[in-house]
Image 1: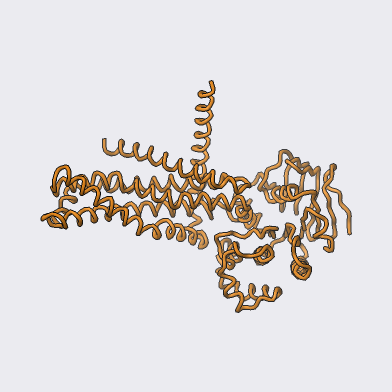
Image 2: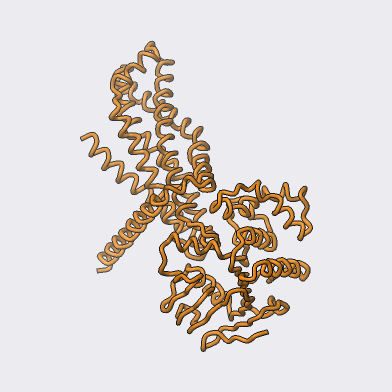
Length: 223
Length: 256
């Protein structure tokens, strides 16, 4: 699903590594800078000094621009800061990728979104006001939920969770984890990668592979 | 040595900005077919609303005031002569002041807003978030802003010219015995389609320049919020400078 070939970048060096289909990975970096560089490399945002990144069998830094964006449709990222677009309202943020790529109007996904928010004790009445808000006033948790729903609605084959549990109360961590695990199980080919810059936030997460970058590349052990 | 070095460095940086702005413009225009996608059209409509519709009353007011000032000054120098005042109104407002004033208003309102907005989106990694959704920022953020601002400047310039001419003529007809209609005839006797066309083309070009420069500088922000005021100032200064240069070029090419 993702293959790193002999990567040398500004902060990370990854001699050779494959993230395989259908697995759950937990990667603990030494710092936010390393973690962000990993995301940028994976998604073709930051070109490495050396080596190549293959995402869904495509060399992500050497593909036609349309193929590149098409490939990224198969990837969902739940950002630590929420990754919401500040000048779009909550419902526009949730609906944007579906509306942009498939022309599905926001009204069409309303029921699914309301159903999803029930996991977080938000009913339809509360949501009617909430959906029209701009993200500037929302908490990190609210923004991560927007990002999570937005990604899930696109049914990606690869989900990247960028430090999603950091700074959250344990009940909220538990709910997000349940949703993420349920979503992972729904498609046997789906790969989930949890990233963090400290061990603490992912301690209770069950992953098949645990990874820590070291001087030889990635140190890996199975749970 | 030091002065030569500074001038040389300045020229190289300006050339890099010019090249970057041009390639951004080409990239944005390549995405024009994305206007058929509803969320992209929504960005375009919002831009037209913020730049065009929300500025209408300010542009009209400034236009009327400019028209009054011109008519008063002309009457002070040569007395009230409908043909002459009409000619001077057309020369100043339609040929020059209309496009130029509207460009300055749009630079003050929208150029700063766009550079700051895109800069903050870049610093907060919102643009990376768009990319990871498979959405090309050139298609979704840049192209609709360029088209929206250009269309707005084009329409505002036309509106400014009508306001200025109407304002000037109404005031002059209030203080003289010459009827508004007579004065309007004076304006139309000297107004040609060529002059109007040049003025509107000039406005559209100003719109393209302002919007592309604003987007270019906004997207130059790397990761720090402190870069935003710097790029915003640079966007305003370069937009003004480039608009004045193009104004001179178009005027010389069209009317000499």
